[in-house]
Image 1 (cartoon, rainbow, N blue to C red):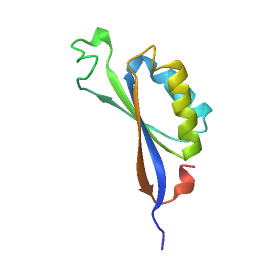
Image 2 (spheres, rainbow, N blue to C red; image 1 turned 180 degrees about the vertical axis):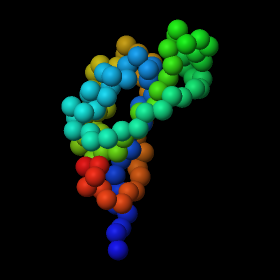
Image 3 (cartoon, rainbow, N blue to C red; image 1 turned 135 degrees about the vertical axis):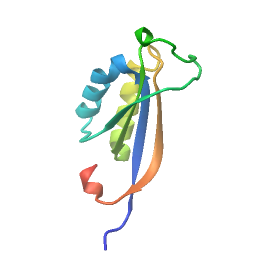
Length: 101
């Protein structure tokens, strides 16, 4: 029987204009797959009210501890100070961990 195994899920919330750059960074860290959805919300930078201001996206991917640390380092060095990017990590469990690691 297949068992659940622990892995990390990293969630990144950013302006859609950063999508291609963020995806390239994820791939450079060895990420095999990701999910991107458009999101709405309000926080420190308040809600966007028009499309010309840009839309927000949420990128989620599953990764090993090592890859998560690499991604967070890139985000810290290249995004957090310049853009309204938010990132957080969640412990999750998956079947077929080899597909994500």
